[in-house]
Image (cartoon, helix red, strand yellow):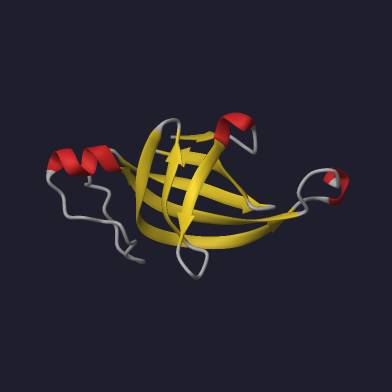
Length: 112
């Protein structure tokens, strides 16, 4: 099941990135999530009839887990993502589409 959020004010997130611009962790709705794996990323371009909105944005599909759940479960420290690995057995992990445009980050979709 997934839920779409789009670029509303409710979906705004703070994201920490590495030197390449890939997300390491993000804060959303008062919680901090550690990126466990980067599944893939892509560039999207808005249709011409939405010219007043952002013209393009970078989207990252990531697997992430609630950092508090990580510490409570005694799982290893995961401050850096491991590309290609899958950690879906990690407590409170899920797949998120996070996007950036004009240096603003937002949650586009959450899949659980």
